[in-house]
Image (cartoon, rainbow, N blue to C red; front, side, top):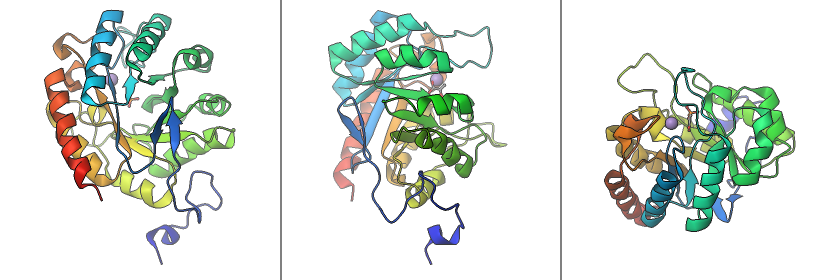
Length: 277
Ligand code: PEP
Ligand code: MN
């Protein structure tokens, strides 16, 4: 009996693997995720200015990233922290996207941001804090663009898959999962990266899964090792925070790679890709 059969999973969930053993391939503005490739999405935590996003987009493109990330609406723990530039950030993302031919992923926090965001972005992100925002998930089920669903800070894998199920059942089959660390007793890292979740998802779900080692670790020094571990775990890609001057970043500078570190990581991943079985 396989691990999968042993689990007594609910029957007929759209998010689970059935007889069809293949990972679903999802297209984001011409880039496919879920094939035997390893796609890197990279960019700043938050879009800070047009100059900054153009500079970052140019660098991540040059280094081989396929998708540009950048927050416009930011879910900040403190209401006094930088909340994102909103619509302006979406406009800047679109300019960078066109200039460097990079599809864009950005987060929506609320149902009333969806229409605006789909006009500018190629994929919408549900952040960790919103993983169980059921009205948002249902509304994203009506959207014609792919959804990147981050794992909740304290969500079990099954709760995460049920969150995906809300989107799928509401009519949008294009869901990509993102493991971004979960909250544990450990305090050295911002979260604890649960790479076993990648192996579990690969076993029980057909949805592609990527890993975000930036939010998972909270420290740029730890990101390359966890990015490479994510590759080895069988994930379909990565989401990385990159900033031209991390110490000046308006959010998450500590976990953001500078250009030198990002370029080195991308070279290392390229060498690992050549070995992928
Ligand atoms: C993000 O990716 O910008 C973000 C806020 O991440 P998370 O929801 O995983 O904390
Ligand atoms: Mn961030």
